[in-house]
Image (cartoon, rainbow, N blue to C red; front, side):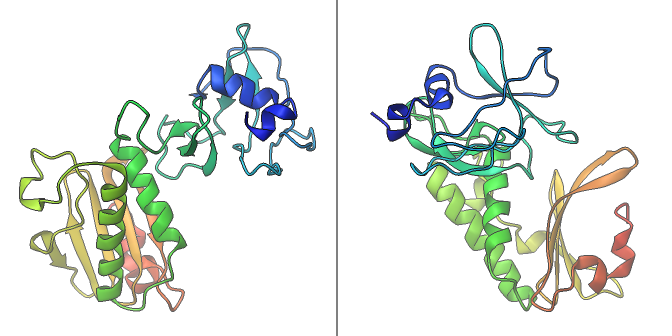
Length: 243
């Protein structure tokens, strides 16, 4: 028995019966705030990490009539799988320690299911964000390639064969044959079907979507170089995301 259950954790009892589901609009009129196991403030935020080591996503939780625990995604999180989602470690319905993003599982399920590309890409961005800032294009490109390969090797069983990218559902690092240099800027650009990756000479990295939403392009990930400058500081004209 998990130590939280010994303390009567309502969260884990319901979590083990029903996996967390993320909803964009609350269908219930009333909200019930929960404490984490081991105590906590009932202030609308589940922030305290219990002594057992499991963590809960911050935010509000709601019960429907059959006691399924659901999380209300904060305003601005329109997608079910957010690339800049909240990460944590918690216990799944099987009691196994697992990574989650916005209430969704990050690691393969017991049945052998592989996380979707959005979840794996979010994990790549998380690890890159926690890494030490780079000081050059070479170190930044190496960080990107190494991180992507590590995540794909851990979470999938797809072979690392970039030449077969059309038939393998693996996420591959930007290839040098898709690299181009920007005029008047010391920045390299890597074009992909769905996104564009920029790496500056100071080690700054930025990944932008190719899709235009509300008149502008969304930035999925940005990291400053070791000198503290972001991509827009190295190449001001890229401040216009439609450039």
